[in-house]
Length: 174
Image 1 (tube, rainbow, N blue to C red):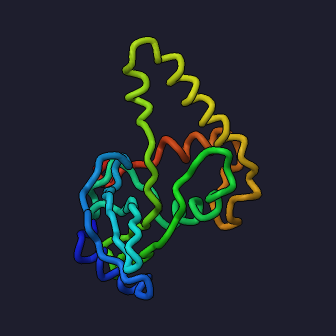
Image 2: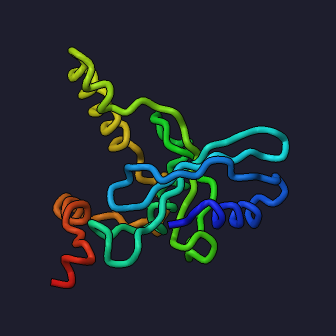
């Protein structure tokens, strides 16, 4: 996973004209088997932006395999095209040359965790409806917004197998 000095060097490379300084960098939970961090950058004009970094974990330590290249292409393809808010993709280090591992950076946006809503008295039905509505919006997205190179399962069984049977590196070693 990247760290603050690597992120600073990366920003100096990809956004040198903006004169950014990393003021906050901390690992965050989430991302299930990927490493994530939150960073805040103060730009030379005085503005600040926060970002989420998502990178591959060290080899053979993830719960399952997933592909940052595909994930990045998907984020780029759906950005601004869905009725639900998705983080805007900003930069990608596809080789890990700059950030130490394949890593992409997206805009951070404040939101309220669904689990917080569900824990309020009487709010489980509301949380369930938010969840279902969100999934429905994702699944009604026209496939033509996806990049042609993105893998598309040929049928329902292949789709389910693609989602739920990707073995972890540890499982493949057994």
